[in-house]
Image: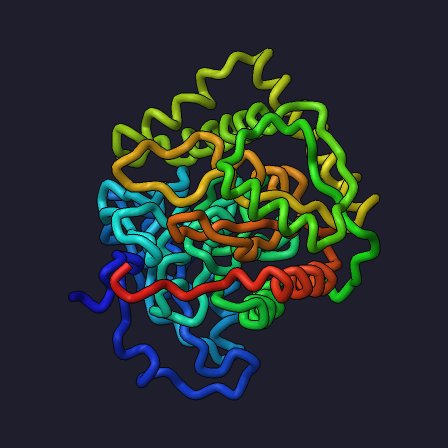
Length: 385
């Protein structure tokens, strides 16, 4: 068996820890994997694109500089969806990443390599990026903790973007303490508290797997049944409008870069959108962002399933609705945290996410810790899964 049977890393520095200069900082000795669209000096920097396979970063991204100064050690570059567009992590150039809870199953994406590396214990923490759910989806599928920072509270320096208006770098870890420690180092982390008993959405038009419904129902019960709100548009329509925007940005940003047929097809959706439909999409996204921020301000936080479906085999098509819940935090620019919430009948992880206010990240973690202690759903992968 290889040392990485999950294909979580596309490049690994096996001597990083022993050669690292000891630094007495808040993250001293912590090992970190980094998604391949975040610059680490001297390491691969290709965003999963075959045309950039040999490309290396010539400088560290700001988040990497902060990690190093805090004593963390960068141990390698993790696998990801090509261009960070998708939620499966079956990369045509670097191969599929396998879910540590079940080989042959997707870890989610686009930060699937980061989530799998953390779940398998190959590093203490990993950085991912989240455009419409790409940290929280794989966190849920791999049964770990993932934090999408507020869009304007973490630097995008050194990031190959999918859509700068939605993108946020963030960490994944096996516990909330590690997740918070790293988040405080790499971002403008607010110590504000959260007042209110929370809210959830009804009439969202998203069909969830029965095991997801059951796990989410238990989370609502543990929180004392938060109030219900609804949005003006179905989540699937909101998610599609967000995807069209990402497609349009990436089509321009990667216009001269060779792509797989699959990615090239995805990047046709944005450019071929009619002017009238584009205006409608942007209006819907702005309205949705305002509505979500208002709900969070009114109730303190918004709790939702992370993903409507459990992990699925690589042999099956990627479910289109995976980002129907996670996209809302990106559209609103708010921080969102996914924690393990339960398990399917056949032993696959399920997640729940909490969206809070920017500046009240400490309060968001306090609520997550309380719920996490009640759910007790974290479980390390079984050997030979």
